[in-house]
Image (tube, rainbow, N blue to C red):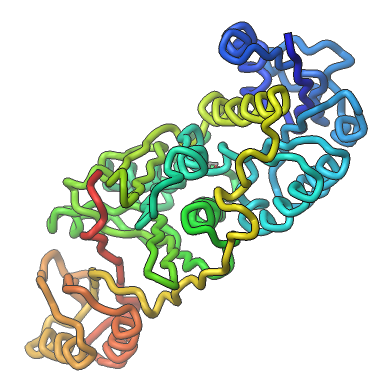
Length: 438
Ligand code: HSE
């Protein structure tokens, strides 16, 4: 029996799941691959926590560097996270000729280009299926199954924490802070939820899949990012009145020589398949010119779903190593010399539909003043609703637009802000009516 020796760095929730699957599903994996996956070392400074696994004392160590220095380890599994130590260890492992499996989307989104180049130079593989969408095989699909497709657009719900919070606000009418508290109490949200609720984690993931889809270097810094912390039950209620729900979407689209890549809350029609993605689930729709529309959905967080994706990477590398296929697939789905920089469109060039909510004084002429400014900026109103009780001096006016350019919308909002009949902080939520329904 062929054998591959593994070193696991980091034995937190996902690392524990990886160890469990490796130990509990050894026979199944051997039956499928003909390869014995041997967990040779597990490094974590915390030896107190009960992981429900009886590691041999010489297997369970404290210092991940011992794994890097162990010539018997073929594949290093980085489950530490973060951008500093994880990067050092990954680069050190690559230098030692070890293959790497990681779920570290923050690291890959910001430094993936250099890491992949180092791996190519060293003749090793870096696999990262679990970095996007938890257990959903989106990386594999983009690298392999969709190889003959031009990818038009991808729209994802890529952050389970945000989706859980939005689902709670929608279903229970509670505010953002209360929903976040529930997410934290149920173990979905971190103590510091910023990366998740401010859209950064979803943007890390979008940066990775956009590069895979279009053959461009990973470009996180040019992605427009807006999170869900300002979404209110009132806007969710208005959205529902118009037949929409609100999701944190990660969107990329190809436009000839440019791509759109943006993360923000958006209204989507209640009939769209993405509206059925609730709780901590993730989903991605992909449109390929040959396949048409695809819809992937599954657990975006959690011990075993994420570990399952890690195991699929380990098996890919083990197969490549045992059967002579290392380097068979380029890291980002395109051969390195075919990767070309494609600019991400500035947000001001985006064209979509919009929802506005203004707090206004309930007086004659207010609607005319607002719609006059929108008209002067080339923004056509599709629907208007004034509804609900007065709060303080203001009543809410809600407007939906036809297609409008973001630059015009921002300019109009600045002008509307100067009207003394309009209260502070107008709400803008983009509406995605045109996404495929798969
Ligand atoms: N924190 C992420 C989420 C899971 O809430 O989706 C890991 O990518």
